[in-house]
Image 1 (cartoon, rainbow, N blue to C red):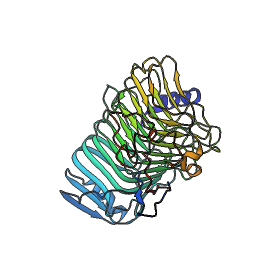
Image 2: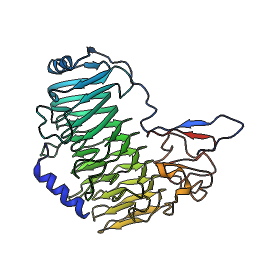
Image 3: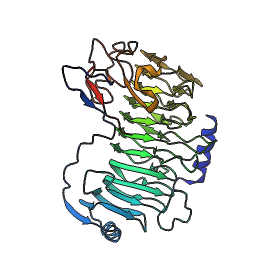
Image 4: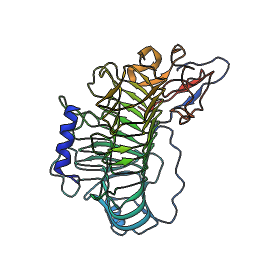
Length: 419
């Protein structure tokens, strides 16, 4: 794997320790933003190469030039080689021809098939790639990573992508070993999931080393769990001296861990950034660990998240290690206490740690939108400068005050969740 055995072993060691209310006078207002209501991208600019077969796709990648979009016709492309983009490129894209992410499928030989041939990954970038978009397609069944960005790649964008059953991290961003990495990445309107479980515990949805200014928003992460007896990594892991990440408006369903800024003591494993308006749900039948972790990440804000772990972990939000100072944790709705561990310091304000299933539209299925009777969360939050809307993009406040958690309740709201 591209990060080496040492990091895999270190990761494994660390993981082991460590409303539906409708008025009669008006139609319902339909919301639901994470990955199910995707604004279409503009038509591709520059040179467009249309392909409709795997052979044509491989040829287009081999002949790729700057300012070029490879546009894939609907269909399944059984990969014979990883799509490797290695060299000096500016503003390139691989995208499906339609806005349906499931209409184009890039398929590997299987996440558990060690004899993967020339397809260890789905898409791989190296060299000096300045601006790459991967959009409107599915990548599935690869032995390692679905998408790999190596240092030298900058400004990558993943948009409206479905990633299924990868053998290791779904999206991997590697450092250069000299303090540099991939910066200004965006992952949005995408679904990242396992059909059942991962093949082992060495897995994340998004795993970024030494990356600055990433944005991870409006995505769904589902079933990121290890086989029985293992603990999978965080669905979103920003670490190894990453900084200023924004993770917002995402939905996490039955993942072993949700979001982690930092993982270990490393002279600041992450710095700054914000985690806001995320919904994290885990069913009682699914074991797991913390929902949101701030570990050796100073000046990080954790605001207006809803974390409902059904009693599977006692402290749904934790901050830990002496380097985690200046942390602000506010307006979060939880079903357990906030944990300050191992010398971490910060401000906890306006949080509600007594959430019950009755607060939500359908907690059993992971729909954590508020219902009218959740009065201890509605209009009880603080006015925080870093939060002006909710997970569905609705303006805050809707009532007399701000609501606690990721959802701002409104009586005419009919929520459509991506499942």
